[in-house]
Image 1: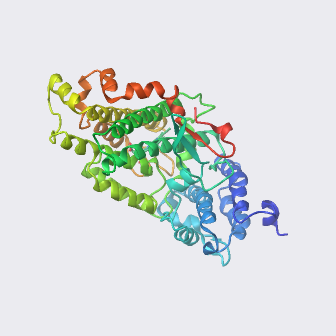
Image 2: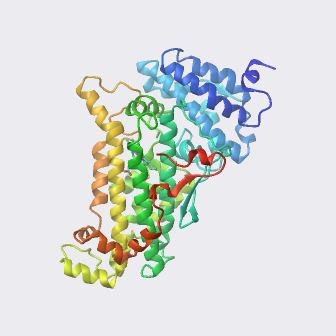
Image 3: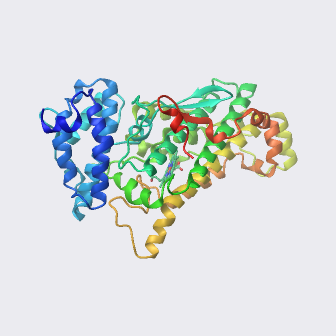
Length: 458
Ligand code: HEM
């Protein structure tokens, strides 16, 4: 038995040896390099020595193995890229040089190997690590439940109930869990809303009212989940320092100008903005720019939803007020709602959407923009290979503030003058609330093996 097989264990499946290396020795190596205990060159050396011989030609893997390897080699590629770029100031201009090693028979150059694997997976996965594989595929499956029944869930490509991280720190575990649970709730929200916009559900029927009500409460649950995350004690959650100096620094370019993983690629959030009318022309351009970082089915889904009228446009037109509510008096608004309670229900969804956006903005400030401002004031600057002055796809604090404002200034904002409690009764949300779980943030949970030890984030 050669050294590589000995380090990995001999009786392993097609991807289990790679998985084991990524979950154990790789995270230790990342920690040692970041702590200055081990030179950066040890990372590519270990990949070439231990991992490369374990890999077969990409086209010989089945679909499941190809997806698992995209997760695992995505994490490996992030380490290669980061350590290379951190080891020389000029390296950021030539990120591809980080991947000057081969994998599998041949060996096949790393970037070519990853690109072939992505193509072979049949998913349209980008030729580098990406949001979908890093979070959705990587983490255990989830389930969103409502009134005792499953609404939806997000699958995993692994069946061991575990997740893979860069350094094994609890900060990364919690952050990834928050992302996947949030995306799961968003999926349930979109499944409730999309059939109304797509024409499958009568906007004036009881079903539409119910769907809008459930969407409101699900968004409230997502907001509570995210605001609860920010309140976790540092030892159990994410520290700004870890987010900025450890986690984000793995989101390097693999090739100049490519798109590193980011929450901005969350397809459910993009779909919700289309459904709820946040997407103006600039937003649609932003969506096109994000295209290469998405999976094929995500691009197709968003292209479809982008053709539908948004729910505010659809409902205002169908209620005979295509130009919006403008400065209508409270009496006129009440009369309109009396005829069309669905407008009250949509208003509550839009409010919940805007409030969720406000909490997300708070998180981005707490974990990134405020501490970076402090660093700028104290002369520490922004020395990392990934800038902490903006997100990885280039969105800065102003861009996130603008998006939050756009969500707050929604098409039914004139209804804000009426008491929420009245709107909730009219829309049937008050009745739904009575049947809803006491802790709305718990509507999404991990399922499958080890689920009981990882029910939810906070
Ligand atoms: C500690 C928690 C979080 C922090 C610090 C954070 C930070 C950020 C930052 C810095 C950006 C700009 C990204 C870029 O330029 O590429 C961003 C964008 C975004 N993030 Fe997060 N994020 C967090 C949690 C989440 C969660 C849980 C989701 C949902 C799954 C999410 C979804 C998004 C989306 C959709 C965008 C695009 C901007 C928008 O639509 O408002 N984020 N986030």
